[in-house]
Image (cartoon, rainbow, N blue to C red):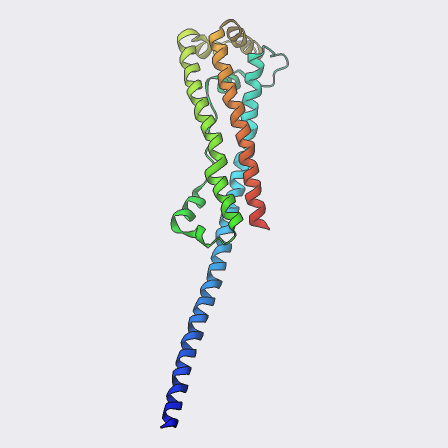
Length: 224
């Protein structure tokens, strides 16, 4: 009887041990798969950050270019210009868009890929970058668009020559820009609108630098 009981105890122990080993192995394999998936997710994000970084460099350059051109018109300092009349129209009556690529992040967010990231600092940095600092740039761009539309409407009603005449004149770019500048200096309402636009352009640049810093922080965390 004791032999039978001992036999069953041994068999039961072997079964339990087998199940435990199998469970442990499955858990270990899942852990390895999760680590591999985490590496893939971070690599994908890193690729997207490179694209966004190039976008930031481009936007920073053209944002500053527009701002500096508009400042010179408002301050009536157009000697030795390095921009065209068309550049001036873009700075004053148009705006530069801002739409960094987020397809990879969005995909990872909705298919659950982000859950494989174990580092809490990286998770916080991702949230800050994709859902934080960017909106300061976007918000000021949207405010700039509101003023830009007011400027364009005001010009169309009060100074249509800026749009339909000056650009076609057979004169130098400097002379065209000087004509525009003279109109601005004589019309305080138009100048006020341009000053308001400039304020949002400045704020947009400030938040772009914060966005750039946030990107740098995330990149460093991912690559270390």
